Image (cartoon, rainbow, N blue to C red):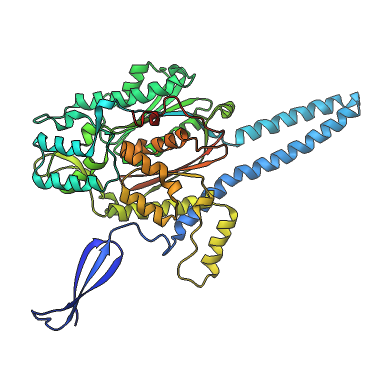
Length: 512
């Protein structure tokens, strides 16, 4: 029998002939290696109908509102015609009937406005650009890491290799205190960094809108690792003296996908407090995600994560549609935490020497791909053109091929903002979703210029599109983010106008 040596270096199987054994009990037998490639799952191989069903469930649930609206509008139109006819006859004996009809029309209009959930509008957003003295090149990173005395030669060599292939440029931002020899990071350091990031983004947002801080009714702040007491949301309330009626929430431990989770929470709260303004602040504190040890799986976040934050102003007041930038069309969240492998993929833990850091499992790309596949399968019925859905179901039900037709997502969106994780992940997603370089441009440029800024990453990408005047009225923007748990979240925004370049856009500083 042939001898097989299995290794798990990659994800998809590949058999490599190694020749004939020249020694041992299998002398003379053919020898080969089975390599398993660790990448995204093949999106073309199969479709989980559970997620297709879930997507159409969302579609039917929201469709009920539109069916009811159509019936009410039809009734409303009929009654308007009758009222116009009676008035044109100038039959004043029917004055009582006309009054009753007007009351009926007002009732229909009230039911219509009450039945249809108000849309969530994005009035504006801001991304913080740290001061230029915090810029760090890849070469300087390695030099500072060597001089810090916190890493051995193997750790330095590993980080140097990862940075070389990361897709990051030489103008990302990091606090210099991370590299100071014998410097122990304190809670004060974390608070100071968070304050700089949060207040910088919120200041920029308030400076470009006419919203008074006391008008904010809802506040949602998300930060993965740093969760002090009082909370980060309390720091914002105290700094800006927000209203005593504020409904504040602080999300922690949810990773890079928490930014879209925070938008989802803000949307639900706006429905509970209609006519209000919601402020969402997304950030990650590098001082508390930094790892100063020797375990390689815990050094990966050091190489990719960088400083950044975003502040987003939301409203569901119907009149705000005329001044808002975007309307939230769909938001789908997928959580794979039920699976133990997904749950253990990204963990905050301590190594053998007591150094705290994020541990990233080698299966993260594979399992993240499964979460992405489930998420887009659920999202597809909500966003794809009818022709694409018909083509998909026709191939699924009547096609003879083993692989079903995968819809063309470029027909559903004009722009895609994929969280800037790493060059390898972006390459895999581009290939699996059959996207073009133009669709990937915002993600790649953000990774190069700002690095992985965690939950705020997708907002730097949207800012890039705005800075380059790529957003036109009616364009649909798809934001995709991944997070520990394991999660994959999608948000789809529709542009309500042609977007002009923002004076405080962080991309204005590129090259300065």
